[in-house]
Amino acid sequence: MPRVLFFGRLRDMAGCSEREIACENDLDLPTFRRLASLGDHDLEEALAARSVRVALNAVLVPVAATCSVSPGDEVAFMPPFSGG
Amino acid sequence: MPRVLFFGRLRDMAGCSEREIACENDLDLPTFRRLASLGDHDLEEALAARSVRVALNAVLVPVAATCSVSPGDEVAFMPPFSGG
Amino acid sequence: MRVVVSTQAFAPDQELASFARGGEAGAVASFVGYCRAEGGAVERLELEHYPGFTEAAIARLAGDSLRRHGLIDLLVIHRVGAIPAGEAIVLVAASSAHRLEALTAVSEVMDYLKTEAPIWKKEIGADRARWVEPSAADRQAAARWAEN
Amino acid sequence: MRVVVSTQAFAPDQELASFARGGEAGAVASFVGYCRAEGGAVERLELEHYPGFTEAAIARLAGDSLRRHGLIDLLVIHRVGAIPAGEAIVLVAASSAHRLEALTAVSEVMDYLKTEAPIWKKEIGADRARWVEPSAADRQAAARWAEN
Image (cartoon, rainbow over the protein chains, first blue to last red):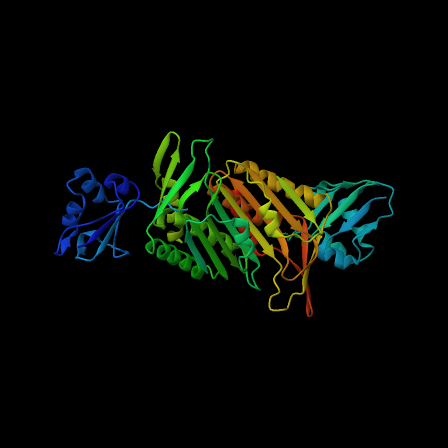
């Protein structure tokens, strides 16, 4: 089962920092976002925002639209960074 | 009697860091440079270089040509600075 | 080069004192960022990171800066977790033969940390809890390095 | 603000540790310049200054930078006299609310020290003794501040 990680304000919206997603098949990213949001449409929309970067197994996904999520993958949704 | 201070490579050329100039009258700067050089024409020319800044009584002289030196004054000849 | 991402508090002075500048370094530039109390409005910052991913991203941007500016050494320490007002968040130190490279690298690394380090910063006070996002000025500051 | 011109050796780490950054400082930037051995060619630097005049000139350029950038505090220590290879020549530290002001002020003060501080620097080695003059790059670096 793939795992989703939420950071920053997305974590606050989700109410948790990670979830396991019940799915045994490969998923495209929009489908994964829908499953990861557990019916929370505000969260689903927030995950799809242009400013949100996506990492698949701790590697930044350059073009989120082409991303496919397999069972065992870890997908991170990351709002704008604010280090320093 | 006015006093002349030499800094940096001008000090090396003059062979000393300061001299008292035997003179009881006000002097314009070219005359002061000639007296301060004690007949050393290379030094006199070096003191007149555009890159050399002049301080009169520890205040930078903006336009050296208009500077008049009185007995009791301290005149510093300063080649390009290299702090830091 | 040394990159540290840790929840531990650190002492900037001690870290700078032990920063090995190397024999031919003529220049050491540094920057320390502190958690500002903003007149008591901020009690602490809470910095989230993505373990592994965050360290790798900072190491990559630091390594790029080290090579681009021909630095002798570079140190980046970024604290994460809860940081009380007044304590240090980040330290960047760079050594080089001449001053321009070290000074430029420190500014550049700081600008990149603001927009490219996977860290999320929340300000917590009696009357506020808000996520900080990079300002337009932060984005412009980071963008100027890419232009050169 | 504190400006020191002295023949005494100083410990940059200790000076930085005691640099009072003040309660609302979010940023401390610093720069330390060292005497480089240049592979053994340089044994020491000899820095001449004009007592009184030099201190006043550095205090003026430091005060201008403090005001222009709204700094919280600024420290300039410039050693003069004989400085053996490996020892510190100059330290500039600036504190401010946000990073840009402190980083900019440190770069600016360093650039001005190179061209506007009445100090004359001679490199001494087994095979050389030469007066250092600001390079074209140093002059350009100082000039960029006047343009802004």
